[in-house]
Length: 184
Image (cartoon, rainbow, N blue to C red; front, top):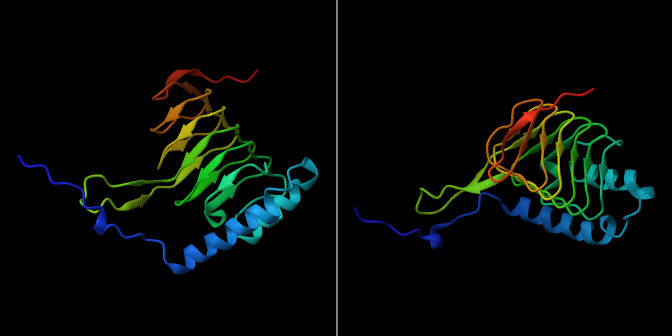
């Protein structure tokens, strides 16, 4: 059986000029009008800036100034939810985060991948859905197309490649069920 090589000269981005220009504008705004305003006093101001770029957020959301968001227009967050310090929200595809959910520091949410079975290695956007009352602990990775059910907890440094059932605690690389989450 002969192996074909990937031909990346054939690669074409699905993102048109409008998207690319919007990201240039967003990145400039991020550097000048978002990132420098890091204190809690500017929490609603940062939400306002993101809303101006199409993010669907509540003013009770808390997004730290050090968060990286690839495309605010692909981000939806519920009330009282948090994107912690240095979270990387690589949302070429949509990312939905429910109410009262915390994504802890240095976590990485990746809503796209490439189809490595095709010679031109095309980009595939796969939305991430994170439910209500979820905690994604520090330095975790959430992969493309993952659905994390309400009340779930992902332990620190978890690598989540498959869906997580509601009210379960997972951890490890790859993440596996550790136990049920029971609130007292």
